[in-house]
Length: 424
Image (cartoon, rainbow, N blue to C red; front, side):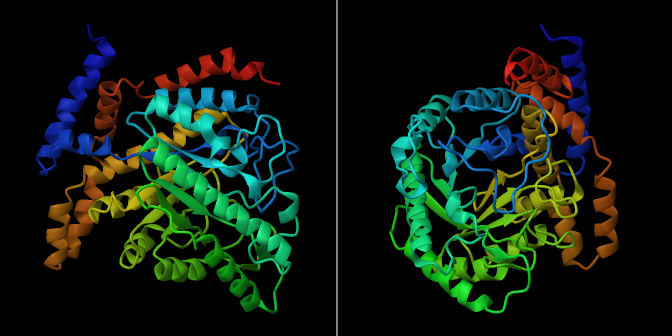
């Protein structure tokens, strides 16, 4: 028997569906499409990017997790338990992105150049039981050999060889994850290399980076198992004046080598729109990995919320019909609020953005644009903002067996009392 709340949600959805139908949009079909869009959630939100390495070092590489909210995951099992709670509160079926420093080595010190697929078997078992796919990232930070701020572009050949070996190991692990789970793993490469102040010889560092990347990607691994991506950045803490792996560098490299380009929404100048970069990159690339974050001034990793730019990202993907060519991952970490809630807030915001895009009467808007009626296009875009998207979202949650509205937060509060608050 439906509750009065469920009945109201159903009534609101019927009314909303009629509104969208009047614009030529089938809300039921939009929800079916939304259910087929997987997000790749980032494991590092649950533990402030600490990982599980024996003899761990402090967080470095221009990365900073601020806050000390209680309940940080300290073990793989705690992190997986937190993720199970997140999955419960999200409609749809989604993926998980791992970093190399989340290897399970049984308490033994295994350096990153020696990591093997077996160190991620626990994650494969967990993912297989939940029928989710895994993505992977090499971890080129928070390590004694990255302490000088350079890895693959370091002048020291021995240090470069170590990080090249780590990159090779990461790709093999990614291929293992993709093969074991029957879903291609996106293996992303980001390095923190850069200068705090003005460099003289940028070219030498970029030449070394190019050579290192060539060594990492020399081994051909099946694309059915592995999709390689490279991630640029504008600047970071300690690399304010020059990032070796800049946008231009990696865009050119990805085009030349047939790789995915990672577009992180927190890695560009605040006035740059990543939504505008998607179709430009896809004109020359097979695919793009989108890292959804939220930049606030100098910080690039605030919890994602439903902004106009987030909606614009989803619209660019949906309007171009390139859902199959853009992999959508989340990338932020906030230790100042409940970490499970942060995961859910960002993921639900991203899904809502895709819902807005899928409910858009794109054909009507495109027709106005093609005949040069930019007045009508702008007027329609503005009027669309007032449509009852929330009613469709609530219905989607209810039909997916997921708590709607703020009810999900009550579930997180209970989990905090029962589990998170007991972690010291």
